[in-house]
Each structure stands twice: as structure tokens, then as C-alpha cells.
Length: 166
Image (cartoon, rainbow, N blue to C red):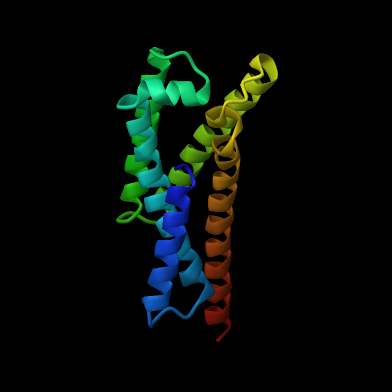
């Protein structure tokens, strides 16, 4: 389920690009991929995390290897809801808003990865929700988002230089 939303974001971006007759620049392609990762991968993915930590909290706790009923789980749910809202708002807000969304979700994701790794090392918690795909996504999705954002801005700078040279 965790991989569903990043893959849906990629699929939506590829469909968008296939149907967009005006898409002709690398910057625009990167921007579209990043947009869908922010809105679907982050927005809907984090909303799914919010639902899991609230409506399915006991199952989610078991999946991660936590004790059910911890008030910290509701705090994680609220963080997920905040990131979900930021991700969806990226559809309407661009520029530095995207950067702020990427930075905040990176801090959360890498912080969560740190907790998972410590739980593996200190409690040997090898539950799939702790040591599985979620750990890898907590590390890799921020790297992908940072890379896309940097590539988009690099392409933008190159385009501006070409335009200025003319």
C-alpha cells in the first residue's frame, strides 16, 4: 500500500505527459512528475497514513511493532494530515511552497527512518511497518523529491541562460 501512491503519482504524470501536446521541454516534464508526486505521492499517501494511524490505529501499531493505544500514534496521524494538506495544496501553489513541502516532509521522513533504524538496532523490531518498505520509502522519497526539485530548477536556469544569450 505504501508504494501505491508514489506509483500512482508517476502513472498520472506519464499519462499527463502522453496527452499533453505542448510538452516539449525537460523542465516541463520534470515539473509534471514532481507535481504529481507532491499531490498524489505526498498528499494522498500521507492522507492514507493519517487514516491508518486514526481509523486503523491498532492494526497500524501491530504492523509497525508498536504497542496499540499510544497517544503518540495520534500525533503521527496529525503530522501525516498536515503533510497531506501541504501535498494537495501544491496543485495550486508553486515555487517556494513546493520547496517548503519537500523540506518538511524530508525532515519527517528522515526522522521517521532514524526511529525505525533505532528500533531495529535496539529492539530488533523487524516488523514490515518498521524494517520493510516504509523504511526505504522514508529515506528514498525525499531524495527523489529533492532531486526532481533541483533538476527542475537547473533546467529553468539553463533555459534562462539560453534566452539571455539570444
